[in-house]
Structures are given as structure tokens and as C-alpha cells.
Image (tube, rainbow, N blue to C red; front, top):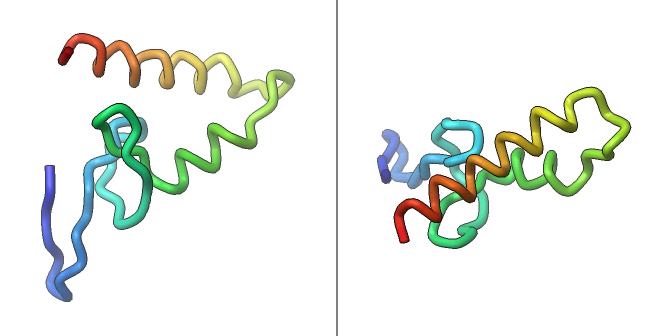
Length: 68
């Protein structure tokens, strides 16, 4: 999904956090915002949120696989 704000900046829909963001990367045809990218690259397995993040990331890929 694409949209424009009033100053002409494109926002893309992050398939990981379900938000519209301005910056990020495309991963296997899906947009991942910069904040989620940073979260994924810095989280450690000892973090209590790790299982939740892994589950969300797994769903990110499963949704993509269903589109293939």
C-alpha cells in the first residue's frame, strides 16, 4: 500500500508492525520499516520480548510464502 502525506513524502505499510512508515527496506517483496529492522537486528535471545519478536517475524515470512 502506498500513500502520500501533504508534503509529498511516500509512506509504505510495514508488514511487521502494521504501520505506515517513511523509511525502511524491502524484504522478499514486503516492506519492513527502519524501526522494525533495527529491533530485529539488535534483539538478543535473553530479552523477554524475544519469543514474541520471533513469532511476529515468522508470521511475516509465512504471509509472504502464502502469496507465492
